[in-house]
Amino acid sequence: MTKQNVLVVEDEELMRSILRQLLEGAGYQVFTASSAETALEIFPAGDIAITLTDIKMAGMDGLALLDNLKAIDEDALVIIMTAYSSVDSAIAALRKGAYDYVTKPFVNEDLLQTVKNAITQRELFRENRALRRELNKEHNFSEIIGTSQSLQDVFRLVEKVADTNAGVLIQGESGTGKELIARAIHFNSARAAKPFLAVNCGALPESLLESELFGHTKGSFTGAIADKKGLFRSAGGGTLFLDEIGEMPVNLQVKLLRALQEHEVTPVGASMPVKFDARIIAATNKDLEEEVKENRFREDLFYRLNVIDISLPPLRERREDIPLLSKHFCAKAARNLNAPEKPVTAQAMSALVNYEWRGNIRELENAIERAFILSGDEIDLESLSAKISAGSAGAGEVRDTANFRPTLEETERRYISEIMRATGDDKAQAAHILGIDLSTLYRKLKRYEDG
Image (spheres, helix red, strand yellow):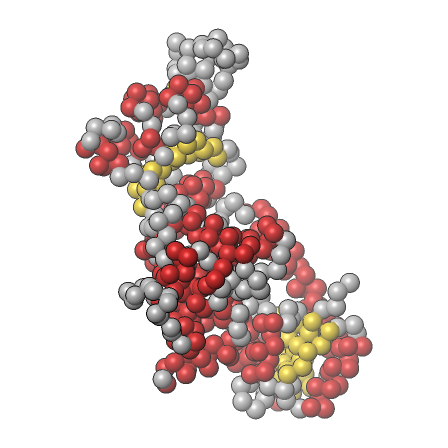
């Protein structure tokens, strides 16, 4: 079994040595720190299972360290060591989220039992979290990445409308994640246990699309060798997602309108309508109001579909989400290729942030996958396509990389600023994305303020 990592934070050298020997003798891998500041550099990189810290130390004390560790990992398990005279402080630590405390001088067996109990608790946490993730993986927004205000507004709207039966029209450019939003609505609704079915209305000819949606009877046309229910009825109790609704032929629009009004469909070749129970969510990359004006889309159908309107912003209007999306797609590429994850250099990230992304999130994912394959140990400017790397100069500046030469500090500062904006100034999350420890980030931000 892999050894569990325990971090001992103690400013007295003799006590550090005693604790190391005791814990190593019990089979743990032990890291030691003589100060809370050093502990904050070790913790993010060490896959620490348990942190055992003295409460009174020079500089940052154990309570402040507890706060910082919880900011980095809210599930961090911290055991406080305290003298009898400072038990009140240890109780305060429990209120702040410490797992337990031990008093000095301690009985070795009692300390080891407390650590063992904490390890057991950690494994239970992990098992429960994995189980919840499996049970609810389709019920959350985990695949919709971003902290921008515009995306948070979309999340709030989805949460409000999910558990209703109101029709929803999702509008946005190609590649903005319209189907992900439709799935989020479905899997956060009372219909979540029922089917989610999707069809691209622009991908099939009119005759096949009608049969696909409404079904057909045996012998109704050449090749109809059996009855077919169609998607409206196959989605029984669930959700039918009509993607690219703006591409639907006008003749079918009439039949769709009747279906939505009467909650029934007439299969091709049938003489009697059949009831269905499915929520309809539609999506389009077209301006449907303009399509209505040009008589290419029925006005009555538009208003029937557009009870709730969700507009997805293009990626170029939420650039602060690009660092998070890039990290997500890097991790995805690493999993797909069975390779270690790679960091994105500051210059490459600057180029990604400043590129226009007319293909939106889909284009960004393809660009990251390409760069991952072509790059070495890190995704740098050279591994990006020429049209993307031309954006490394920064938004609003001349994007001629032959003439633009930002200093390393300027590039780093710009990158950290982008990450801070993307995380809503969440320093712990930003430090995790940047791949540096929290104390290093604090020092850099302080230097930028002073500069």
